[in-house]
Image (cartoon, rainbow, N blue to C red):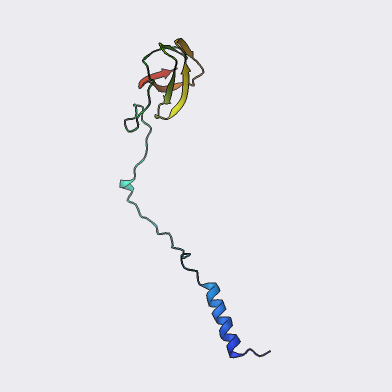
Length: 121
């Protein structure tokens, strides 16, 4: 079977169109970034209260007492009290009733309640 020159040109043009990427679809190669080991920053957990994020506090003042693994919270109003873990991440929001509230079941560790550090042993 003999291929005519016109058919041969059309086949080459079709092959070129299929092999070339369309506009906007050009893939760029990833470039390697060479970093000096002296400039690497390693995130270390801090035992201090984080200064960069602002923690929410309760709307009304509360009194907090820790007895073993139970936290006693005295409140004059019904309110929500956010509790943050040692990294400053919201751990839970406790619903407080007027009067004495007991909060148990917190795992051992350090927490921030009303920007006050609390340690559960």
